[in-house]
Length: 166
Image 1 (cartoon, rainbow, N blue to C red):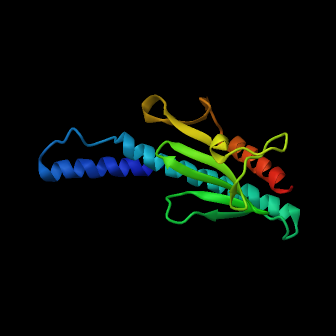
Image 2: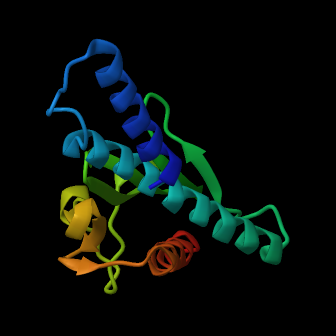
Image 3: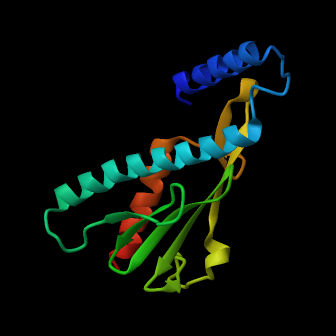
């Protein structure tokens, strides 16, 4: 979380109390607002890291064929998708504290499988959950395990490259 944001909020709240002459004990930390903004911030971090990795891949690949493209999704706060050879990998906020990751192929739902079979999109959707840690810290998890951003990006970009090259 941006350190200055919460300090600015604290100063603004104190100034409002001084100006009004009234103490409002309900002011302060709003967990719903914090969860929403942290979900947007995390999606932005995933996108930035994914853009860096995809740019490196595209530069090393050299040709324009099979390049990974990343697009923001309109009318959303921070959703985005990777696109290559008709394959899409979509990252979206399902709700504050929940991020969905799913594959699509050429307008149809597609789930890559080791044996070459496909499943429905809902069976494939991976969900990342934010869990409250001590002192209002948010910890992002997958299957109740804490995750690291670099490993998340490595996993999904590698899987996306392998599946979209077929």
